[in-house]
Amino acid sequence: MDLLIQIGLIELAVGGLLGWAVVLRKEKPGIYRRIGIKQPRAVLQIHIDYILMGLILIALGTVLQDPPGLLAALLVFGTIMNPLLFLPGAFDPAHEKKLVFRVIAGLSFSAISAALIWAVILGPGF
Image 1 (cartoon, helix red, strand yellow):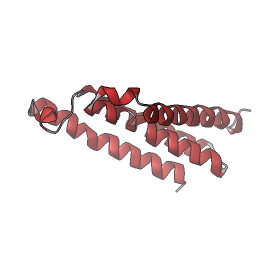
Image 2 (image 1 turned 90 degrees about the horizontal axis):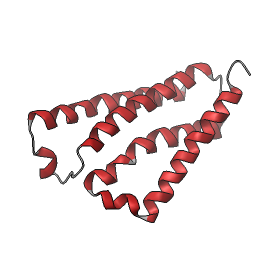
Image 3 (image 1 turned 180 degrees about the vertical axis):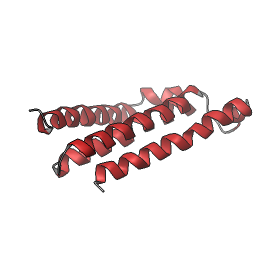
């Protein structure tokens, strides 16, 4: 099985398992507060984003035949990091204003954007 598909399936599994964290919040109000989460919606965003990123990787893994290593690395980095960018803000929204967060966010968004454009160029139909 292609590496992009394997990682995409792992991301789908992570997203699916995070659904339990969303359910837990509904069943046990206040649990997020006890573990320090100040923005509960961020957990839902991570859950949804990992599912979407996993689907993107699976789709690209089925369409791209033997993608260049750099393209695969950019896709994997971007699809793993984009959902994780919600995590620091879940605990403290002030983290999102820090330079290190902004640099990582910029790199992540740039990586996934460049990789998706590159994938379109390499994909069938061009």
